[in-house]
Length: 213
Ligand code: SAM
Image (cartoon, rainbow, N blue to C red; front, side):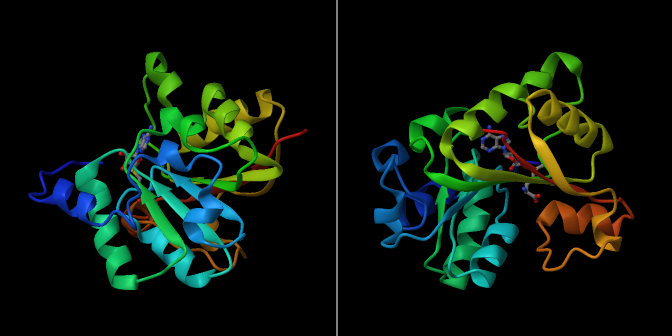
């Protein structure tokens, strides 16, 4: 993600506290109260500029969504989209996902989306990949027993690493696609990165993974 300085981003995030929830650890175990309903909660880790989360929230009003993005200048673009879309079932968190268990209670979440996660290609950085075993362990903690991870990327190395990491963790995988855009998968909502890289001809890989409990 190329970062640019966005003047006023921090103020905009602060002023829209009903969309970008401040101090999310105070809501741990109480996210259904934030949304004021008992709908399932799906989160995206590394939401970026928000296209996927806003598209999903519009398409699935019976699901609550939380987009998590660590950079304020980036989440501010997602916030622009959310303000325009005015969907009640989407909130954003401007936090680092390393602390997910501070924000969500055990079993509070129904699904984790990982889209075009940073590949961290150097082996010495593998612990930073969002499908590294420590992250899989964190997702398992906050997910319900039948909760799933839905992952897509154009990066073959990251995809292969992730499949191995999930398999070594004892997860089961289904609906694996090595070319999502030429598959029979319906209802795909593209992310900003997906749009950019698929338009350059890159193949998109996708998998759904579940924990064996
Ligand atoms: N998912 C978006 C898409 O497909 O267009 C953005 C992809 S971009 C390559 C990865 C995003 O994940 C960046 O915006 C980055 O800041 C965010 N990110 C990476 N690690 C994160 C973490 N530990 N916590 C929160 N956000 C993270």
